Image (cartoon, rainbow, N blue to C red):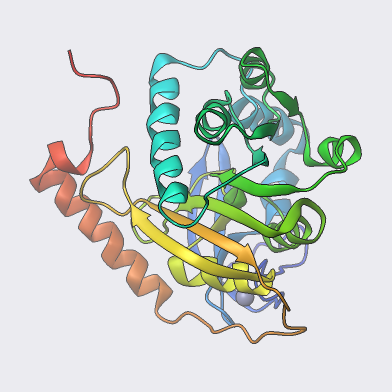
Length: 300
Ligand SMILES: [Zn+2]
């Protein structure tokens, strides 16, 4: 247990309880980052106030530089985004998303997924992207992109029949609350939600701006708590690895009659499963480096 007093009271983002032990402490971008394991439900999370409390101004600046990059995206970035977008399109096309009129991409980056969906379905696309350089690239593709969810909500009244969130949920202070808001305020009753996050049992996951670490179990529980029904879950490494299930991608729909209070099924042996996952990643990296980590640039 730690002797440092947390800057703000601990609060599990999944179950809301405050009983948690430290599962890991590390340095990330010059900050001491501490992850807690909830003793009630098994969720792994940071107490966001802690890193920021050390030096709020520096934290704000570092965070902004890291996650709202003002630099131009690299060719490598754009290639990864294109491969991801094709993969995600394939997933929704094969799991019941037949028609789309209006879709929203939260964390739209350079607009690659928006463009891919638009070309496949002819849907009107709206995006949310805080990073200025990325947002401009998406706007150049002809899409309307808001810098924040708040501005989107004040600017758009019509709902969406698809909301996508690729590598966004793990950055949010209140992922459960945001998922609930999307269901009640943004998504049509017949709409779909597509979410992708790093898989805590295969991906390193630990990083200053990753406030939550998801497993298939805890992501499922959080979506259920937020009033969704899971249609399809895929654990995969695309486009980074053939061997490691680095990512969790889930397609969900709003529950017709969401339960008032739904018991959270706790996840057990989280620390052990994490250790085994880390060991597997290390072994495969050593034994089969070429399949474990695919090239990030196109081969000549
Ligand atoms: Zn919990």
